[in-house]
Length: 335
Length: 267
Image (tube, rainbow over all chains, first blue to last red; front, top):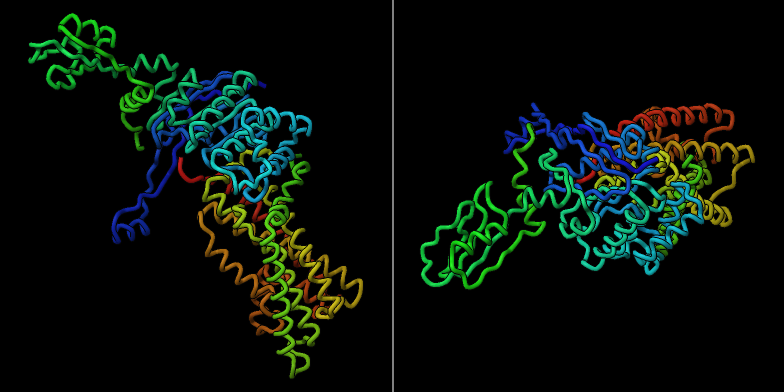
């Protein structure tokens, strides 16, 4: 069994009832409900290799969670096919369950009234994990996540960071080759976030697990993912490495220059726009789709003007993704 | 085969209760107060009369006290433990039920089994005390005791399926508060918790025979106190078994439908 994920033309359409505004509208909706189709995911295809960590990115409502729910077998796609560790997840839920682990944001799968270790023991029984194996895995998880400090505490008394660490451990206790993490570090402090990232790196690099991660935290993406799939309005916008994304969407540089006396009427070089001017201080940025790279722009500015000071600001990944989301195309039909 | 290894799931509620001593104290106080009040009420009602509705004073008190004890079998504080189906659907954690190799129907049944056994321990302890102080009369014979236990087991199975129906309702409506309130009232009224069904008018008892509620408590308790004779026990047990089969098939059908409607909030 390999921990690969194969997605081919996956689509999911939800049918909802439109609620008309006002009292009369509500009555009309009651008598004559208007049903509309919402295409949450449309014709998405991608692969994740065994032992790879892929970040599935997109703005809110892009279709990330729906995609994950189909890959975990919770939702059945309207069309298309997915295979996770050689299993069609929505057709063989129980078999698929043994191959996958999942954490959905702040939603815990632990039993609220019981100490964490009891939850782990229940999961051990459900997944039929041998006791020795279970103990060894708990020790391994404890080394990085420092669970033993609070695993005798009832879940209801844990902090968010403690609970999510326990949920991560719970999702991996049965040694699944594939792990789905839907915004696992949302709401956590930076220290715990880093601890979780280290844990995930360890699971991918040392244990060879395949991880599909959704997050809005670009630092997390930079630290963990080499490859990114970007979806928006339910459609796949880009599938590539972080470098490829930067090349495609990362041209949001700025060149800040202080010009020598006499440059009051600034006409920027071709492909470069004057964004701001405050006396001798000017800020240039890319102009249009044929804009030069930041280094070409720097050279062009220096050649054209006499400058006393100059600096460049390159966009970080968050800026890049902002541009990528903005360029992600029109909404899918019917969405 | 996961169900064989998942016995620990049945411990969730009892263990949760043991970790929350105030809740156990509350159960003890509630049970004691309820038994004392029920016994006092029926003693008072029979103070100036002999047999009423075909029941003697002793039969009526035994029936009412046993009903109070039996109603504790599944009346646990799952809400505080964030472990009701409505809460799982509301918080989106119901998805985890579908991500495990243990099917949700079996998980739900195992959880309920643990609750029943835990509740039975309370009811048995209460029964022993009531028997010792003479509030409850012992069964007339070993045969009556045996038939009562069998009938009570079938009744609890029927009650489980009724509660399951209400839980399954959440998959469609996302809320079940009203349904639960109606069910609790109907269950208590038509099973004999509020008062033995024998005290109700004929039309009400006829109506009750077409519904499953009276089979949960009224039948086993009536067998215990001798209001239903042993000669009629076979027919009553067969009716209970029939309800078990019907409700089992219907809830199994709903589990299949519910699997297509697993919706979690947001995302």
